[in-house]
Length: 429
Image (cartoon, rainbow, N blue to C red):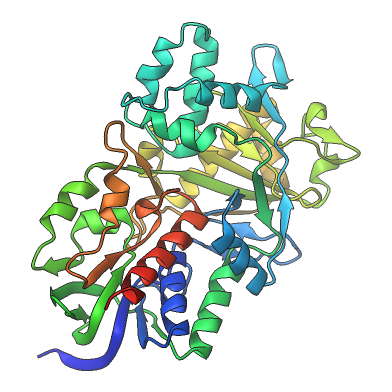
């Protein structure tokens, strides 16, 4: 028999940024809130690590702040978390060597703005209709969208590409201390407000009826009047958390939202790395990295950037469809593939690059049982599915998380979705 546990006004599933934001807002309005989190930490897909001797954080989840909104800015101020602009200049490895792509972001913006606001086509289909793009330009645009959105070009909504990339240049920044500070700040404030976060609590079932929920986790039972689910789309789809009665309309909708995969590796090299002679001279200035991003089409890891202007760090990234095969490998194999990609892009001996390596970090979000993937994207003709996935059920079940947000795949989208779900509860009579 399940052991009865704490009752709450609202139970929140997940202590990612959406769950923390929802719980924080509810607790500020006097609601008794219980957050159940499967991991032994808060943050969800936010995963920041520190490395000895480094100031810059190692981000294994989100790193960039893509614009943001008033909710994010307020949360950053409370957390005393400052931002720094990210470099945007782009370099590409081509037949003639590394070349600066001076018009790269302007081309992205121009491509996005050329998409009809009312189209129901996929991005790939829409791009084929743009006859003024050369085959090489089309290939580059597809590479960008697939990598940035972790999406398949023949599935992602062209309209969503227009909305997300119509004015991208100059909008990205990074947190100086890492996104984990934001999650920890929410958790600290929530505790002061009387909210409870229970870690290492794996939820398996939610029984519900109007005005009452009962959550089963680890042989224990938790009761509340409402529930906010912030389950990642991959977990929700897996059926590892069962709702009784079933939410059949939601089950249909969750298949109408794209679910992308990403591999990223952070390398730390020897302290003299930027002066080692291994880095192409075009990417350096006064012994420091002088690039925003560089890419090499066809590599396992096609996109690279330096997260710090001074420290010997490089991040390798791929979000294109073939990443699924890469994510079946072990972490050690993924890191090795990334290092080989870097060696080929820079035309340097792999052994010399490996000799300068001092550390490597990665996290396989696809194999993580509490995430099962990276982030969502809108499918062509199903642009409203995410919003509808976030609609409440019977004034009892409420839904948040980046897949339900107006700006999916972003931290500020997840945060805003948590605020929205909390306000829906607070609006109940």
